[in-house]
Length: 96
Image (cartoon, rainbow, N blue to C red; front, top):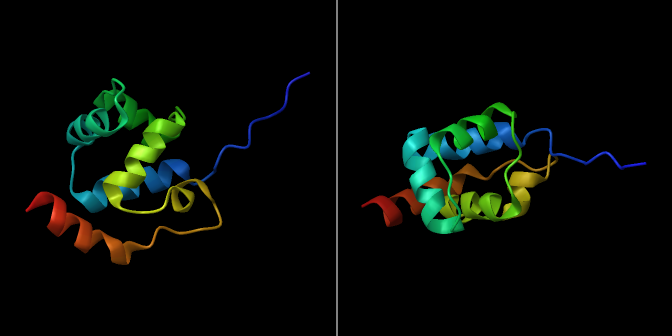
């Protein structure tokens, strides 16, 4: 008898929000995640995460959090929104 996993219901939405806020294509996001997570991720994986067809490993969610400069709990906790005031500071520092 197994236990149902408590998957965050808003995870896909938040991962898409992060990628779009960073202004990256799915391919570019996969490249950045590969660098941060140390595992092979393709744009197809990113697409599946954003559509809720696949749930990323914790290492990948952590890589999203680090790329976006947000706490991981804001991504995985359905009761929290991602604080968007942090985007511009991160984007200026990382992409300029």
